[in-house]
Length: 346
Ligand SMILES: C[S@@+](CC[C@H](N)C(=O)[O-])C[C@H]1O[C@@H](n2cnc3c(N)ncnc32)[C@H](O)[C@@H]1O
Image (cartoon, rainbow, N blue to C red; front, side):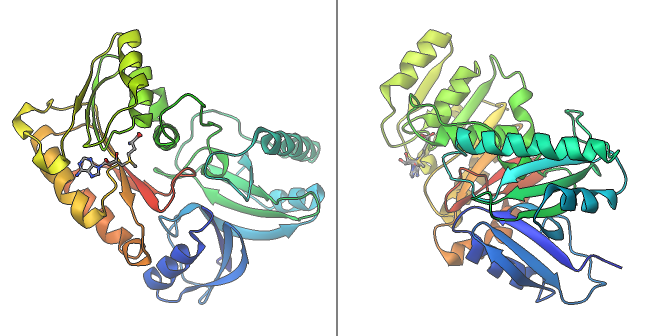
């Protein structure tokens, strides 16, 4: 029989959006069962209903719920029933602050993970550690609460294209003190999500729409890219200094995206970024016009969903991106995203 419960993890504050999204999208087939901040389980109304692997763009991880466990031996009991082996083990915190999980929290989690791996090995259960993921890889998710007293939550999911490979969808990247904005972290997390952090982008060109003050631009320049930034606002002076130090080009067109001279833009840039703080109905026509003119090979778009009404239109906006951008197109709410989602294409 189909497993009767699912689980989702999400950003702090997106619980309401995810509930509305799942209620609308699955027409009541999944109803919220157990809730904690950044975590919801869902009961299937009809056991034969087969939901897709990702329940919502607002969910960082979706999977099949196995329930609460008070001890590692209970986790091992669940793991014994999972097949095929070996499966991967993802241990991660339920609470994921938007500026990154603290080192002390990861240290606590690493100790627990080592204990779980040891207990699994003692029980003769193999854990997969190959770095590259393949669709269908089975992942046992162990979600850790805020205190040692809180039981673990355990579930599992299958890896699929566009799903996060970092446990909980939270890469261990922290925001450096010397970058102009936290958009640096959003961009680095977007690269890590798609595995694009492994690409050699040196000498290639990026068009960065809504680039000021320059957090993402700094990340691009550090990767050795030439950057054309577009923003009506001012850049942090460190951006130009970094471009000089890296021996790469940085140009700033201080104009609105709607007023660009399309014929002067670089053709087929390796990356098109957009982090303009306009709502999708305003910004998507600009992106469509620009992408039509330049045919960027990959896109990383931050869609601002600052109201419940915009959050409820997320599917429509992602469909609009699919019509203009290279496939595949995936959307997620990154750990560093606020009221926005990241759509990556190509
Ligand atoms: C969230 S901030 C961008 C942060 C930036 N990506 C970074 O890495 O630091 C949004 C930016 O969009 C810019 N913006 C708003 N409307 C714009 C438009 N029509 N064209 C270009 N930039 C615009 C704002 O000036 C602001 O700097």
